[in-house]
Image (cartoon, rainbow, N blue to C red; front, side):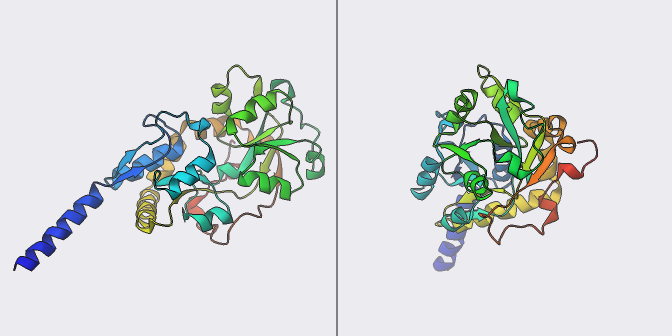
Length: 286
């Protein structure tokens, strides 16, 4: 009888420890980017408490390599980034594209006087005459270079904006939802969104979890799929300010689209799960 009591007690304690789980994530408690919003919703649904080990660090100043190292040492439990085969081997990916494919639809951030710099660019050969800016360790860089697009690289994301204004490269390819907020974040720099082209490749960004924490990966996957099934994921996606900005301002139907190859994509990419993706080129009015 005593043994039975201790077994029941152990199960009760275990269940409550799961319910009271604390998960360390990037950013600050007040951040409202879509990955923050959706991950907080997942945690709320799973009765998980988020913690923010970098709450005193401005998000853009935190290096990707630092986050990877902190995942390995368990200072961080989950982070998100554009995927690659290497990342999917190093960590456990949650195979649900956070931005539903918008990240791989790239529009150029340029100096304000260059908003029509690509007005005469009609093919990929023309585009290769211009230099892109990108992060040294980013998957984007490997993708661009694989397609013979010249790239000027730097380790720090924040360096790319003054480098662009200073003429170190011609354009900074950004995910469809990204550049307008970045312009607002850099009011002293003379930057604008270029009007004429869109570079597209399949480039999902996923949540990643440490290889040492498969149960957390399973839990986040289950909760995200519940949000997708209920329609809450899509609802939150279209409510996101960056997404709304992209769909209202990007003018994708009037851009020349360059489809390029992504050699970093793994065979596990959920291409056939149509409910996970969104293509604004197929929507009337964009």
